[in-house]
Length: 353
Image (tube, rainbow, N blue to C red; front, side, top):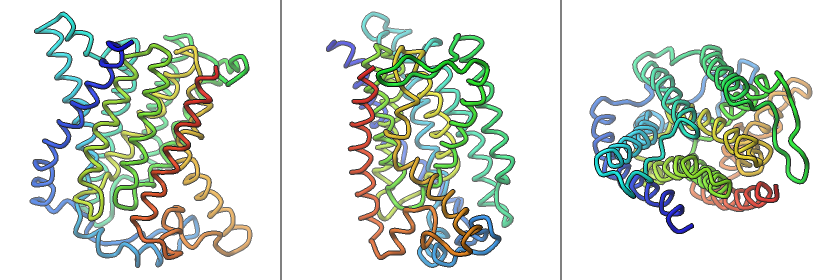
């Protein structure tokens, strides 16, 4: 058990160290090339074509002088950590081989999701900072995410024989071929939650806690490579958060949020029936702030369509709290606290299986 824990915790620490060491290089590059939005604020409303004056007032300064693409630090750190331990195991063998967490059975797909999401998001970010018309359209991004999700869902279904979802206290619910559509729906919902990247330190801390919770679930399932992958992502996110706390040195942006949400979707399904446990059912619990963000956005749109007025001052909901007068740091730290509590509760539910 001690050795298995070391297989998870050592990569976690190494990922954090690599992220901390890499951040100054990324920072230099991003500031040198002025990798920030050229026009502040959001210019499309929540489904009604109006602007978002409250958001624009809250964030009009920071958006045009703080670089985007900070998410590069997260997925590149994970990739470097994976390469480091793979090389270490290859050249030194022995106990060092146990630290290599890149395996076909457990981590190829979530790692691919992280890197593919990071690459597509990077294209969007580059277009965002170099073209005044913005990056990839929402429709294109949704289609790309859905395409990968469909492939990943098919892989689980056809190659791994997974066609059900685990539920605490009960037998797994069989979905048959609908499993693939369910996979796509979960992935798209998670991607929609990526807008939580809107306040200094918020997204990094929330995602770090969520991935560490899944590291605990995977560890309990003896999926040690998957647990190590989750821990490495969490370590990389903590390194990112070190430089993202107020005042942020850079923002996660699309290259980070797309990478993390896609990887989280694959991770949740990997920690489900495949690990003879529950991973997807507890996702809204463990990732409660992400779920709340999506639900609040939907409610805001519906409320404005039906009642012709806003339910919240502004969406996503973390900006609503800012508009109420909460300082940004208070919103961030309270989100961290809520995520820790939700994560512990979600892990407990998963372990009841």
